[in-house]
Length: 576
Image (cartoon, one colour):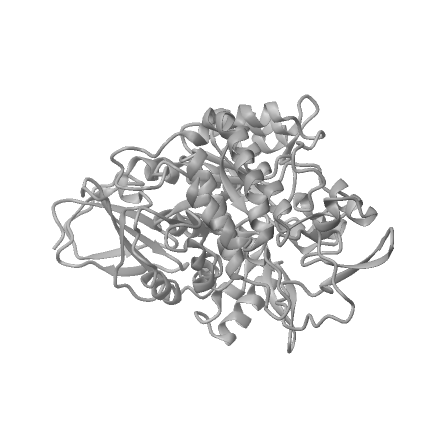
């Protein structure tokens, strides 16, 4: 508790912080027993060589709570059925995107943080899902819906909500504030005492919360602990980089934002040592990994450069940039790790590739994605609007439409094999797992680019496609499950296991993974092109067999990879 108090005082120095400390202590004590009885209270696995409560058996599927629909059950019940019948024992976790009442942004404009969307289900169904899978949930703490009771009471001037949001003087200089979107930073609202200009980073429907007010922090900590008590084990801090506002600064990665992450981490360690904190910061790599802190902030951060660099490799049939970037990654330390992902409910960020891809290469990637049906979203900058996100289904992005359906599936699965090979925990978007294509009709219907990869599905129809032998969805789904089953059985894929990018050229991505006790050592090879490629093995490497196919590897130095082939070669003997 003393560490929590210390961090809180650093966030709220002076009289305001001291006056709020008793309320902080009371809040934590009030949740102690309920959180201690939750799944997140479980400690870390003994003897794993890692401080993380995660291992190679962990992989999360990212999905909406209403992903599947049907006439007989609520969406959360269909979701539970899909995971229980098809994924139990293969994936360990499920990230259900915001499942609360909302007014826009497909859930990220929350009206009530403590309610489950009644059209989707109840807390009972959420708890039921958490009993079979590690549950990740979003703490959308930068902003909430202007349709919420909090915001309505703010406009009415009702304490304490009159301090929950940020009203800005019309004459204030906001020119230094970093803008992730192209719309205005401030939105006018009519309050009880006249017009108010309110800080709205992401949209006019999403009012930013005022964390300079300790009561707002206490409110969010209460919600955080409530989620843990309901079976949530992994908390995703959404858009955390924008949390703390101070005019005259970019209001991005503010030092007090990092202190806020430390505070949530310290509270979790006090009451729920098995909980995991993950930060979502779609920014260049060095800024992103700053949220590891000194091992005292996030347990996991998103691996944002991975999606654009993988797309680049498959578009050009050259894995050079991907190899160079992977070689620069820090060695796994068992205390923190990456949440590796390629696709999500959002698009593929362009900014994380800054400094890795040239401007010409980024422009070429964007052009190719557009040719394959993708869309581009822009943000405001000093020199105009610049592209920040490619909105495209990942299968469409990496699979040349001129190839056969079988080769398109192979290309897509090869891209996913890169993600599954890297140190970290895989985050697999549901539409990648089930082989979806882009939903252009959804974009036309909503007017939002991100709808291209957010299609909701009829349960019976989609499961029928997954079971139809020879169908594209069937090939991708079963191919994905096969890789996941192999991955979870081999300790070399543990988040804390060693990694080395091996010498390769052209389209070949080669990675060596080694468990701490050397009980499983694997060379992962992926051909990112539609042409055969050669990989010259080191003389010191002797292979036993390919984990994916079971094929015994003959004694030879040079390995020929067919178009989009993936090999996970288990080593025999010792490496030098």
